[in-house]
Length: 245
Ligand code: OAD
Image (tube, rainbow, N blue to C red; front, side):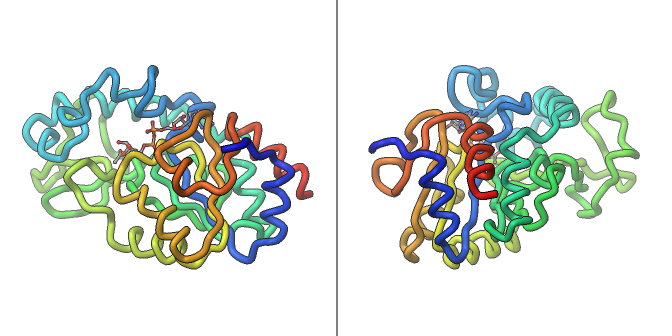
């Protein structure tokens, strides 16, 4: 597939009626949060079945918290990068209806994006697995993990582990947006994880043009992508926004 350029993306955004974005870990790499797959990916150091499956968390929460604490630290220090800011600007310019993100780092919201659908939850929220209460992280002592609620239940970051379902409201909102848009930007995701990787397919089946921004081709590129922009999300999106202004 030939490489496309920010000028083409700017033109597509000018012409479309409803644009949506699907983002993955790649958009936050430039904020200092590693992605999951690839040479520096989190899953090269942690086997996801041992560290990211809900059963692993229930069986051995202390072990899983070893990884969660590392992730929590990185997420707390991270700030939005120009890619997050560019998407927030596109929303303000009424050029982007919403973002479906697989990321749990809250960086789209921190950049000012309003319509953010958290497909895999949010690591800055915590929930008790017994009484289902949301717990304010300010009240938690992260040096004492695993964490327990006053009811005795195990506390879990409000993120979707393997073996758990996508939060139904987010799932519905995400597929509604995918089916309503006529342009979908797929940014910094390997599109290797179901059901998130069904979203571009759903969009395409409903007539949307698929634009992919990634450092390298993915599972989507050959079969679903109409325009592929190879490179860093922050560079490509900043340039695109500058052209639109
Ligand atoms: P992956 O780590 O699978 O993919 C990250 C993608 O971002 C790769 O295709 C990289 O080439 C690309 N990338 C890296 N840096 C980039 C940059 N600066 N600009 C543009 N692209 C860049 O991450 P996800 O696809 O998000 O699930 O992974 C999906 C899910 O798998 C995650 O949400 C997580 C994980 O298991 C849960 O935690 C439930």
